[in-house]
Amino acid sequence: MRDLRVPLKDAASVMQAYPTFSLGLKQLSANVTMDKMTDGIIGWLIKRVIKLRLG
Amino acid sequence: MKNSKHDKSYQLIVIGAGSGGLVAAEFGAKLGAKVALIEATPRLGGECLWNGCVPSKALIHSARAFWQSGHSQQIGVLTEPKLDFNAVMEHIQDSMHFIEHHHDNDEYFEKRGVDVFHGKAAFIDDSTVRVGEDIFHGRRIIIATGSSPAIPSIRGLETVSYLTNETIFSLKKLPKTLTVIGGGPIGCELGQAFAMLGSKVTILQSGSRLLPKDEPEVSEILLNQLKEMGIQIILNAEISAIKSTKQGVEISTKQRTIVSEELLIATGRRPNMPTGLREIGVTTNDQGIEVDKRMRTSLKTIYAVGDCNGGVQFTHAAGQAVVAVQNSLLGIPKTFDQSSIPWATFTTPEIAHFGATKGKLDSLKQNYQTARINFSDIDKAVTEKESGYIEILTNTRGSILSATVVGANASEVLAKLY
Ligand SMILES: Cc1cc2nc3c(=O)[nH]c(=O)nc-3n(C[C@H](O)[C@H](O)[C@H](O)COP(=O)(O)OP(=O)(O)OC[C@H]3O[C@@H](n4cnc5c(N)ncnc54)[C@H](O)[C@@H]3O)c2cc1C
Image (cartoon, rainbow over all chains, first blue to last red; front, side, top):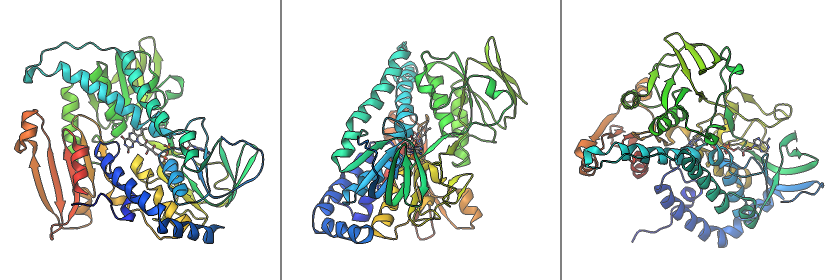
């Protein structure tokens, strides 16, 4: 089965002509990916990086 | 909404709550940063929601439905449609307000951890902006202030009343006659929509073809379609003067003189630049705020995204604000390649494209092969009496360089390709 998630780099930048119905599909898999990533250990790491860089 | 008169400190300040700013603010907050979003007007959404994509696509939807119901004899449908222009305008308003209430509002963003403020931001230094009496300090600042209609300097234009994309969606009645200055995507989309609704439309285009950024073949197809619908097109139009008369606005061109009830100016966009930007040392030019591929301005704490940076002006291009967020918050050297950005023009026929045109590839002396299918070879198109084509340019190894789709649902078809 195909995974609904996309690589994080693609999830962050959904590049598709606006406004289209199919944009909804890309948005959906991007949202699922982002939620998974930013809630877990990667999310914690990202917050640490921001804190270290920007105080 | 917060409104105290104290200094406020943030990891990220986003200026402008349009397509780019909203994406930047939400993404920044999702990554866990402390984010302030500052919007000059009382409402979020920017040009796309209130004066651009959303009202224009809502108008086009009504216009196409009206036009098609009166032009479907070939498939056995004989009707004489009636138009309720007020209801068309209500449909436009409803669409915008639905989106506003659904996700483009203060509450939605506040819930996601973004502090939203309303007021015009002006720069004090590379990490400080003023909004009224409030001072905001930001470790990083993303400018997403968009663009406004560019008004050409034509003798007499300032003496007549004219429409732009900021006013046309508030018309109270359908103009009997409409002249559009500008044959780019906005001029063609709106001109055709009004013609479909029943206005007698003239489009004046200064260049030798419509949609100059698309393939010449596309311009030709659209030109013929618009003419077939009764739209008068004047190419290479040289407008010498405009004045107000009893019958309406009179536009004198080298070719002929046109009088129309309404005049729409659709001659491109000019960037909105926050006050103080140049004074603090950010480099700008006529197109907008200068940025590199990482969307960094000449000052390392400040980024600029969307229409204000003079790049390609689309909602999804402004959405590449995520690149600026990744660079500014995480130091990830992400870049935004504008050369392969897709776009769609919602005329009939619909037009969608990404990548370099043939002319561009020729000028780069790049070899390419053409793969093409006409709609006459697509059964679904035949059953719906649709004409058009899909054309893909590949390099000699077969990798896709660019694509053009013309015809029904072109924008959706293009989405399959990347
Ligand atoms: C008629 C029309 C149809 C269009 N159709 C499409 C389409 O179908 N598809 C597509 O992709 N694109 C379309 N576009 C283009 C699209 O609307 C823009 O590319 C997009 O809105 C740009 O987003 P942005 O974030 O750069 O700017 P904007 O959406 O313009 O947002 C900028 C925001 O910044 C605010 N602002 C300005 N200055 C300040 C300041 N100093 N302080 C605080 N806030 C400030 C403004 O009030 C505004 O809310 C269309 C445009 C028009 C005009």
